[in-house]
Image (cartoon, rainbow, N blue to C red; front, side, top):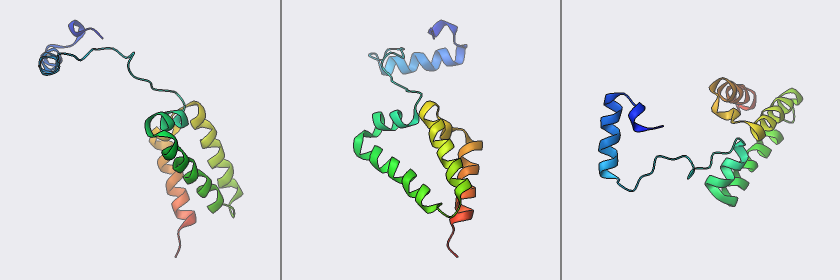
Amino acid sequence: MPIESLNPEMRHLSGVFLAQNPDFVFSTEHYYIPESWYIQQLVEGGAIVFVFFVGIFVSLILACKKYPVMIAVLLGVFVMNAFLHAFESTHTSLNLFIILASLLKKV
């Protein structure tokens, strides 16, 4: 986005930012945001973090062995994350984990 297209307040803030960071380039070519949640975790965290990340999913599926419908829901959301950032949508992730917490709680 060219600086000229910003409103005056944002143009002033961007001018202050550029004055403090003269080497900054307004370009998206330096950033890699994949559409897969798993690839993004692998890029940002590395192999060790990715193994822990997938381990959490495996442990959730194993914990839901009494609830086959929840296993199907989890697998559906995990497949969605291969193509989208499904966990970023609050209505998906928040509801899913509230239901999981209520099913798996230890009394």
